Length: 286
Image: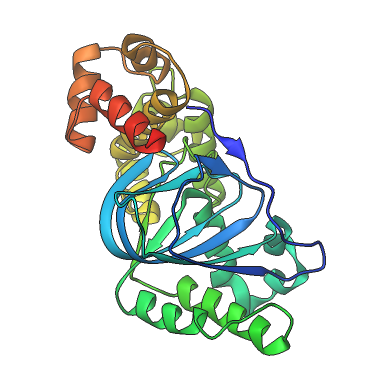
């Protein structure tokens, strides 16, 4: 589905820009921009679409979105009393000198992961909401320190959920382990093929059993599950961005059986690929 590029109001020498809206109408279409975006939405009822992830919710919403990640909120109410506070900051912030220090390593990881979109809840949402309300503009050093503290709080939070799949967000996970990076890059470049465990284990000079144990320990999931989830992410990317048929999408993502593909997709998303596409198009079109 086509999305539009938003030109944000941030200036080159601004650390960030803060925007506040009351009675927001949420009439902006599916879009993306070059900047990071922290969004706090209050008193909302409707749906949020980030990448290939669609969720209906009611109440307050706190999300951090990375550059070029498509997103849209759709309100169920024609007359809205929702409020929106948005902080946008530039993509090069991740590569600035301040991000090279050891004390900011957690923020750097946060910004990398935000390229898939992150939703925060619980105590984190409560605390950050209070802090966002204290920022009036970006013209004071105190506001900048509050901005940095917010990023730090988000970076160490356990109250979060990652939203979009890696393929849909064009996200490549950076790993400290050279062997894990080699494996993930191989999957990214060869997921359409019949990937056997023995082939992957051979890439890193391990036996099948040793590799399975190693991958699970390093990533928290087994390799077969990771590969399946990656392929299903490719599927949702095609479903949301192309007009390819279900059959074409299945085989282009590396599934050699349409029935196995449909079964795996429904188990993950609780709906068929066709239903997923219809639901997604409905949510972003309003």
